[in-house]
Length: 110
Image 1 (cartoon, rainbow, N blue to C red):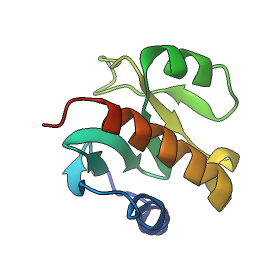
Image 2 (tube, rainbow, N blue to C red; image 1 turned 90 degrees about the vertical axis):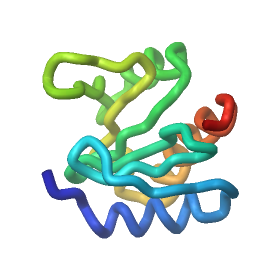
Image 3 (cartoon, helix red, strand yellow; image 1 turned 120 degrees about the horizontal axis):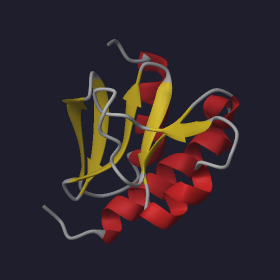
Image 4 (cartoon, rainbow, N blue to C red; image 1 turned 30 degrees about the horizontal axis):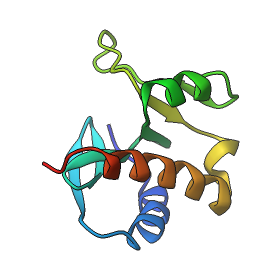
């Protein structure tokens, strides 16, 4: 699956202010790691965001947010996909990227 290169550049501009960021090809797209932990990624034209389980449950009640499914079967807890209007503006994208990066930074470094 190809991923949105423009969205990747927008994410890079937000997450690059943080230390210990690494990019990896994952899940048919690209992932941004903080401290070795997945923070956010891009699948197609959607943003994959890793959150605390409770925060993810709350996010799933919002428009434009859905559960991430790995291979159509496995649903990792705390991982959501965000698309459309939620990430079309830089401010909205920044909030999601920061949420994922903050959570990744809170985990023990790998």
